Length: 512
Image 1 (cartoon, one colour):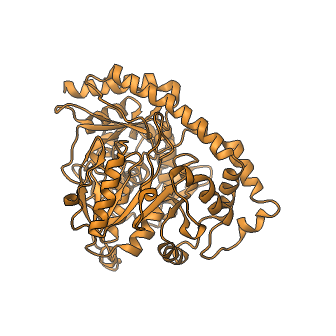
Image 2 (tube, one colour):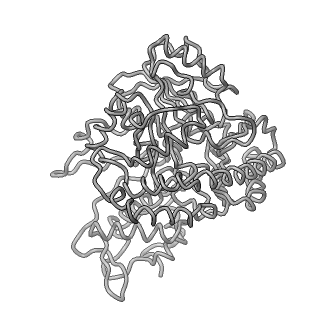
Image 3 (tube, helix red, strand yellow):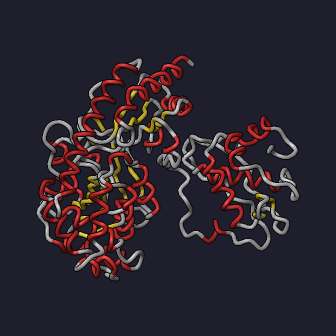
């Protein structure tokens, strides 16, 4: 099966205008847009079958599943029809609308495709949106196809081989038995699972230096929902929010969508610089003090105390995103900001995504009970509450002691990965790695002036290695000398070969 009226070489040439593996936009969307354009241009004849997913995947350099998903979307839209025992054909009754013309140069930020041209009778959605999508900020690289790569050096995806599937399945089953069934299946309106909330108060927070009551805790569908609820309640147009630079891009989008003006705050080896002149005029500060995202630097005790003093002097609130404080390999963990706060201005955001699994989508917020009550009411009219079944299962998982047993083993295994990654980076990088923080889920690599981390990331991908370009994590004064090498997802045995290939990519870039 070949593409009609053209050669594979010309298909690849045209596809390069639409398909960019380095873009944050999902590949399936890019492939669908390419197929829509081909349909519109008449490159597929109505009486001949479309190319097979296997063949098209080979020509475009994507997975077969990606092409199949794009075909399914086109079939759902009526642009492609399935004929039994024959294959897929261009629809005889629906003409494909002309898709957006592919940009001549795709921005590395992965910005969304250009909008369609307005057509008579079509709804102008851009005019209807009360808050247009923010095209100025980068998007964090999602890597939806990460399972297709041999060496995924990523911090935000799970190591599938290490997930405690049997223990988690037991908790899920127990949550549907006996006295737990009601808690799992009921409509809790704006309430949370009492067993989970009590487990958080009793087992999770005390090691982080916090002693709180259940009415100071709310369960969320991950840290993103927590930030979204806080943005809805605390941010209006013009609210000034200080953020670490480089920092957590997803949080920037959520805060900016709420109307915030983002103010970049500098970092050094001790974390965010928290002098009062830096905080002056801010209404809020968003900070990741345990292991700064993305550099993994731990904010010193002195900096934490200085930040609290500065925030109190400016009457500013602090959102403490403590997404992986338990992942530390040397030394003792520093106390949370909330444990040091005596004024009630710190809002603590926690998540179970970094240990249990990101797909479970459970997190929590600890704050003054008045704010928690407001968040609970706002959440009720957005999602009501996270899954009762997952909440009860997680509560049982913690209560049984399995959570902490698995966490200890997970930390030991991550420690071995951290040692392997740092050793191999020292061996294979053609420049000095420098001090590496002993915690977090990634290593922040900064190269010399001639190093282009964004280009090196693309070269590494060609070798089957996934790392993040540091450029994506900057709000201002974007830099390209950095890459982030995660080690949560990669198998321990694959680290040496993967880092060796990454070193090849880095040397190839420096030689360009």
